[in-house]
Amino acid sequence: MLSLNLKRALLESRLPVPPTFLLPWAASLTTVSHTTGAGNVPPPLLNTVQQVSAEEQAAGSVTRKAQTPKPKRVDPTTTLARSATVAGTERPTTPSTLFSSPVAPLSESVRDLLPLLQAQGSHYITAHIHDRPYLITQGDTVRLPFFMKDAEPGDVLRLNKATNIGSRDYTLKASAPAPKLKSATTTTRMVLDPTTGSLESHSRVMPATSLDSNTAGASAAMAVAPHFIPHIAKGKVSYLDERLFVCRAVVMGMESEPMRMKEKTKRRNRKIKTVRSKHRYTVLKIKEVRIRGVEEIEGGGELA
Amino acid sequence: MPLQALRTVAKPQNGVGAFILQCKRIDLHYCDWAGSSKGMNDFLRTTLPAFAKQNPSIELSVSPRPGRHPVIKGLYINGRQKAICVRNMESGEILRKVELLKAASGERLRRERRPVKSANESVRGVWDPFHGHKYRI
Image 1: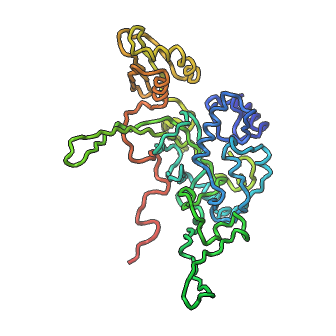
Image 2: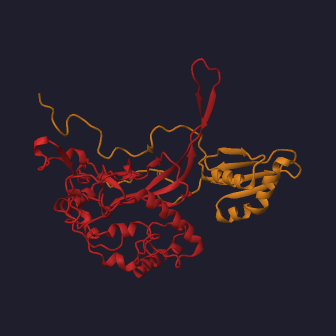
Image 3: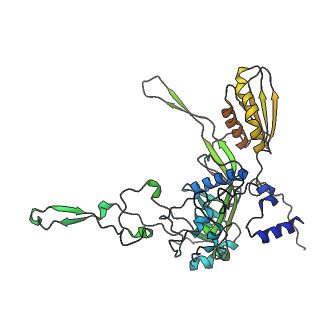
């Protein structure tokens, strides 16, 4: 009888997950938050949603320029996957944006081999949290090298940055990262000043940046690096398309290391200073590692 | 011979299916006379009811322990206990310690060198010289 109700709820509500009231164990399930607006969410849920969204933002934020999906042609203006998985506290997403955005096509190799990858028994995924890779399968325990302040035990995180997904015989990798931008000095040209040519005065000319001709999305074509690149934007790794997989982790809690003592002193100085360290680490349990089917991806819309 | 099922026990995986908090009980001991228990008494009066409401799965027990420092003890599913003496602490600090007990598993503190702990077999299989690329001289 309960299963009939569940089925009816699934068909009626058209959500990937049955309504929360039918699943008491999943009361804090907050993975898909595309309909979150400040006014809609009841107060007890609002806190958990914003916690998860803050973490998803931190763990899975994708910069527009660095996004190069794996071997397929992608329209650089589509941000379908981003709008659904990154929670809506910052971006005013509505349910209609999920269904109305254009779906980028998958490449031939992906369309042919993804079902084979999916059909094989076990899978692993190299998920990146704050750009650090973790090779995980379902059921693994991951101890992160930092402490997530906003994550309470029981919160579910969606990991959307991954570089490899594999099974026994197949591996899905992201495409090669964008070529490294060279600094301006390597491509400056030596120009002979025509008026003082005999005196051999040379001037250095910076190569013309093509800001006026190309759009910002074609930054990979620029041969010259901008004047200052913050270290976080250097983009050494390119990630897989988020639509291809689903990877969820539960926050199990926090653990700390045993107290460490470090003694600091100098030679011939009797004073010894002791520094105590006891760092805290968040522990995650990988709840789900799943590869989505080609129909599911190309159908677009709901990201479960 | 008809198909026979294997007799196995399900592997316990807390979190993969349902999530169960590891901390099942917290005992809070206070003293009416000791000055070190002042913060603890304030905590019990002001902050504890809200914490109890937010965490219905944790059993909270408040009892006096006269003549002693205030102490909070957490009992975990694996049977181990963690005790923290909260003498001379303010209400906010005690709340942080209680949250620490709640988020902890009952395991001993140990330094984990590897971030990922897995009980699954390797996905790609263990290497053997007979499958895959043949070594040619």
